[in-house]
Length: 147
Image (tube, rainbow, N blue to C red; front, side, top):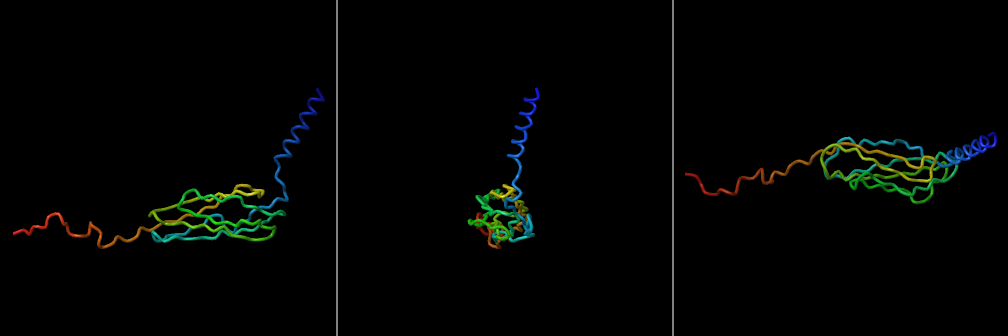
């Protein structure tokens, strides 16, 4: 019985150690993790740069940055970010549709926090209607003058 208990304790220790995070691994420290664009005009793309530094002891390699929709385009550094160094992830939102928006950007890397989320939000103000749109023009269906 003692051998079984001892073996179980050793196995549990090995499993626990394999799931523990490496304290020396690189990790992100962002200046901000959410950016509010406020109110922006429809059809005017906007950009924001999320600045971060590597607070760990090993380089961070970002393998992918994925936006929650096609209206948001991220750009990220492809080279390793050395310990103590800073970099940026740029996010562009195309502002095509009027109304509020709240989008997420998922970062996948070798950092201690392997998956990191960033967020952008704001409101797209509808573009003013053109004065020559059909609803503003006189009807062309009935062109016979009335007597």
